[in-house]
Image 1 (cartoon, rainbow over the protein chains, first blue to last red):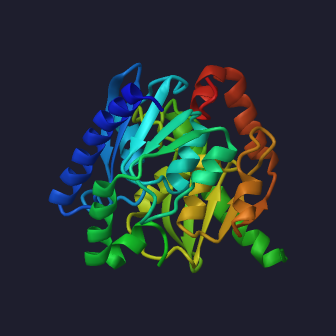
Image 2 (image 1 turned 90 degrees about the horizontal axis):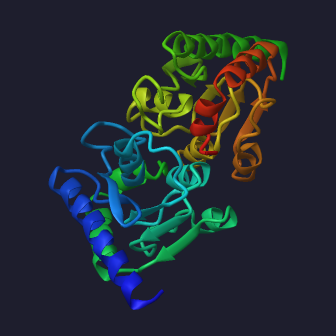
Length: 152
Length: 152
């Protein structure tokens, strides 16, 4: 990854982090996502389990929901503040989204190997800000967190 | 599978097929789903890509959305008229839903092996009615079908 790409990734990840913080300010789970095509934002989203009482609206799913029917995803990149789980990773594989930029995978292992085994390029930025945001959330809301990842 | 279990599976699959037909009557994709716990229906759903312009609402996802925050899925079984794709199969794996009853996998291979490799029990009823419903739909709407499975 060259310097220009790194700056671009950081800029879009910044917007995903803003989405995560928006969710947190609403009493929700702080995970945000951005879908990008040709250097332009197609849609943004964040986890809405709490806000909409909806278990399928993880950050990436809400983002893809907000994007609507965009046709082919072959030129798209999806950003997420946290490594996608199997629901979100499965969606990325099924929708043929070729590239995922991830904030971190320290607090949640997610489905990196599964996505990569299906040809998805996964770039993990391992950002201290993303790690700290999730660590703080999980420490304060362990039950909600385990509910969100289906681990009850 | 004994006779009593088979009758139960057919009864719930009948309701999933009704959901699929409801979607078809609305101009949508004919795939339906039912979530069951302790022999009782928790929620029903069907594909809403066309109806709500929403790419993530496959039948199973709509059903789980309608079910809301149900806590643990460990005692649940999900029915689908078609073998779940990677989005829906990934969700089943992530949510720890232990059992999936499927209408058919002739028209779409789906993610059977992936789900089974994560310990999900997958029972395929291979019902001629489900096969015929999808064959007719795909023949009449190939572009919409390929859009729905991310194959554009």
